[in-house]
Image: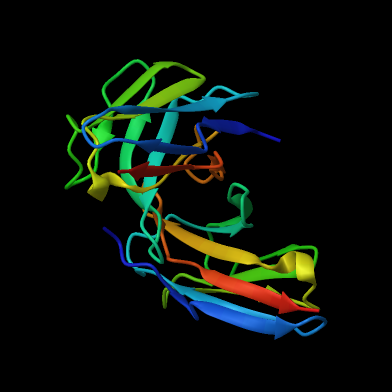
Length: 110
Length: 117
C-alpha cells in the first residue's frame, strides 16, 4: 500500500475566491499522478494525468502542478463557483495500479 | 466519453446471503477492471484487479473466496460478496481504462452501497 496524503481533508471557500490544496506521494519509482473530481451521487471524473516533473495542466479554471522529486502536486481552483463543490481525489501509480488519497472536499459558498 | 455502468447502486441484504455487483463498460472494451472499496472518511482501497479471460489479482488481505470476481467478457466484470456479514457493509466501486496505456485515466462506475443486516 502506497501512502498518498491529501491536505486539507475539507475546505470551504467563498464564491469567486481561489483556493488550492495538496497531494503528497512517494517520490521514488514515480510513474503518474492522477486527479479526479467526485461530485455527490456521481462517479469520479478524471481531471488530469500527469507524468513529468514540472508538469502543469489546466482545464478551465482548474489547474495542477507536479513535483516528482519532492513528491507533491497542487490543485488550484481559480474563481470558485458552486459547481466546483466536490471531493477532489489524487492517485499515485508506479505501475498499473492506482493508490488513492482520501480526498479534499471543497464546498463553495454562494 | 467512456462510460462505465455499475449495478445495483444500493443493496440491502441479510447476513449469510450473497450479493452480485455488475460493472459494464458501455462504449469501450476493458481488458482490465479494478474493484475498490471505501469505508467512511477513508480513501478508495484497491481490492482486486480483474483481467478478462483470466483469474483476478487480489490485493493483500482481500479474501479471494469471499470476494469472487469474474471477468468473462471485454465489457463485463462482476464482484460477488459471498456469505456477506455486517462488516462487509461498505461502498464498492469499479473502474476501467479504455486504453491499455497505464497513464490513461480510469473511468468509474457510480458505485454500490452495500448494507448487510
